[in-house]
Image (tube, rainbow, N blue to C red; front, side):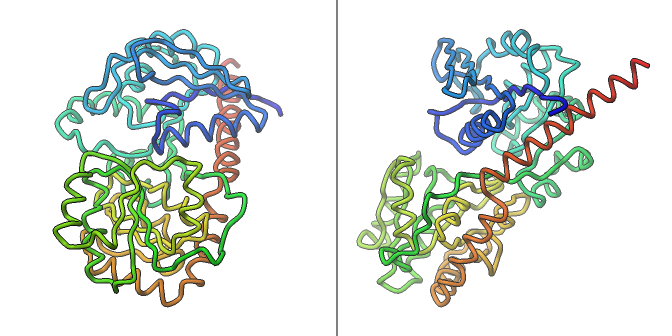
Length: 378
């Protein structure tokens, strides 16, 4: 390989902290190192102490001490120090956003000669007032970036923050490891519905619960996850007299998910706002041959991930009746949707495809950077 770049991913947290971005960072770290490049990680710790982990792959995970979170951002000034000093050893700084702390660290680190890639997982949506303060810093970062990764073509086109930077954007969908075996076995129950995620407002679980009123009595819904709305969602189930048809499974370990997907007939992603920019759980379900019912959300790539009429059905948000109708429609032709869900996963969302696309981007930017330096030195 002509020019072998060294990559430093920078993000909010890293496993064992649970989250979609954290999982993607881990998959990138493992996959890129396995491909022959060097990829390390700089992130915040979840406690007030520094920690260095060295993985079996020799990858280094620098976890800087945190003083807690404000507006969902880890306050870790130590990240600035480490990026300024450790960052000198790398060719490419790969930032996972949203993360104002990582943005600030890059500004202060003065790494002018480094290639910067932004992995734009989601716009900042919830903290609208703080966003006004943060916008100048975010604008600086977008101008500074050599490339911006969006998780879907639709998201790149519809994000208001990326409109002025389309020439820098490249779509690289998130990818996950293919299941060891895809089960279309007798244990699958087409009338067992499964939903998974944090029990928070934008996930729209209340609409998935209300959906059950419009389905025959032999349909059941299992909801996995924990969150602040757990009590109110359980109260809603009781108010609607649906306790015998809806189960709350609580936190589900990754090792237990394949069995649940193997048993489930249809996956329900009832998210209602663009906080859900991609929906990693959709591709988990599709990888196991589980068709998806999801919602069309302006400014989100959720309904690009789940191809309407192919891997599942897309309906308007906040519409329990439409969710139920989609479930019934898939049930009529479950094998068709199940096979297509697997096909769409394999075509677009495998970990191997994500790593290959990233590696190509890293090498292209590295070669371009070296050529630019050669031209300017003449």
